Image (cartoon, rainbow, N blue to C red; front, top):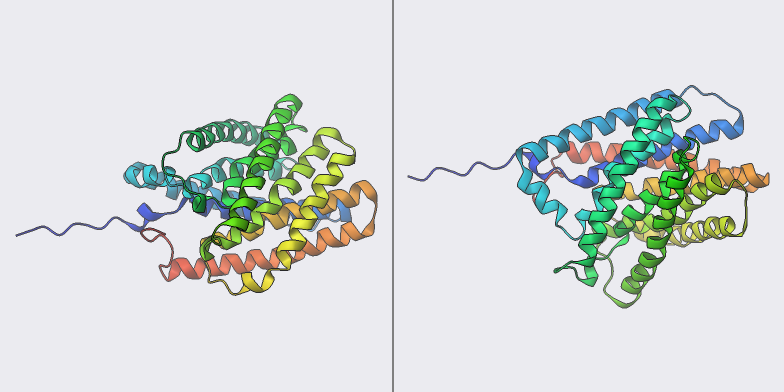
Length: 323
């Protein structure tokens, strides 16, 4: 008589990409903090948004920690996956974004989050790039915009790093992020133009293309403090990519819900904040309207994503084998 094999609990299939939710919520939180600052308003929502985002991060960290503790082989399999590997830095990026969100509320908490996030992200970047260099199983169809995630995290470091008093460290991370943005942008367009299309479940990750120049612009303004030629190149690159992806709206609206839909949120938040920074520097009303308008749209998108994710979890459509 044989004993039936017990199936792993759902937490064994808890995907690392869930941390993209924290990136989206953090982007929304920082966006509303910026909007209130430029409009001279205090809606009283910032502490609530920061609190909800922090709780979300803690819940996801506990769930993934449980997976690491009891189902370590599944984590090892995930970190060796050519696509899922690139989502591990979303953990350190979440810490960096929380550091930015806490900057105006609790600077000491922000400092701890920033130092933890920067150190962890450097470790993730070194590991991921090392895997890229010494890979034995990557193929061109494995390449997708999610590979930008480690680069985006590096560019984020100066946003809180400069006001916290770490300008040289911030320049280091900014330089690394810009270096890999240029390299990966070339490879991504080669893959998109000359190979088969990106599969449907990863199509939303195309929005990640917006993030490096948008975040790069925000970080560069922190580092330099003035709107110069490079700053304009970064901002208008992000603007062009946003316009390009919006012209593809029909294709995105036809997609079935996947957890990758959260890739819409953070890049749009980054561009919204970048537009508000442009408004601050130029005084041109167009940028202010664009930034606040994008933030309003982003708020609706995040509410939709939260609802869709909740329904998917309830229907057991997430945390499945080979998800």
